[in-house]
Image 1 (tube, rainbow, N blue to C red):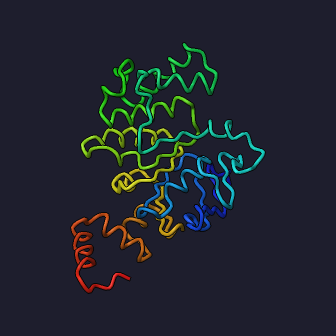
Image 2: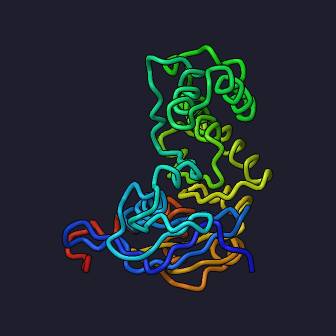
Amino acid sequence: MTTPEIRVQGLRKSFGDNQVLRGIDLEIGQGEVVCVIGPSGSGKSTLLRCVNLLEEPTEGRVFVGGTEITDPDVDIDAARRRIGMVFQQFNLFPHLSVTENLTLPQRRVLGRDKAQAARVAAENLARVGLAEKADAFPSALSGGQQQRVAIARALAMGPEVMLFDEPTSALDPELVGDVLAVMRGLAREGMTMMVVTHEMTFAREVADRVVFMDGGVIVEDGRPEQVIGAPRHARTRHFLSRLLDPAMAEVEEGIADRPGTDRA
């Protein structure tokens, strides 16, 4: 059996008295796409941030490509170079052009010269369909284009793993499709991807596995057709019914808001 690209063992994370992750065990193989779904506050984004050590786990171990990034003696900067991260917000430098946003981290972190960094930037802008925007500034781009630039910036660092934290949640609905198309392309290329998302169509079509989290634990982990199409657990069924049928969610909320209704 090959070593998993991402391996999480006994992961716990608390913020004060609030225990957000309650013992997560998860493995993601090379080239596998895993979508993590669940209600707000279930620990999805915290799990993702712990994989990149943007949040330090309270307990547990995280391995990326066989390297334990939670080892106190690890070179965390070297380990992070293997991991690309795309956030809800685009985090582009507004005073730099698109190309400069891609070349700056390459030169500072990887030590590439200007010509090499520019070449890699151009290749990855083409990869996300934005070659013609190389000289534009972020303010001249739509939200979807800015997110695609953010993906290109992460790819320009040559990661082995890509982490996506709700990459379309800040976008207008008509801009979501182009970003998801780029992510579909990465999946076809064999990129290992861990994606926190509410985009169920993307999860159904692209994910090798879907992980449903609630209350800081993994409730279900399986093929999309099983977890989304025929969930075993009532918590998963309830979440999906509200997510896939907003009208039903509004009815439930209306009932809960009636005077005298037991909300316990």
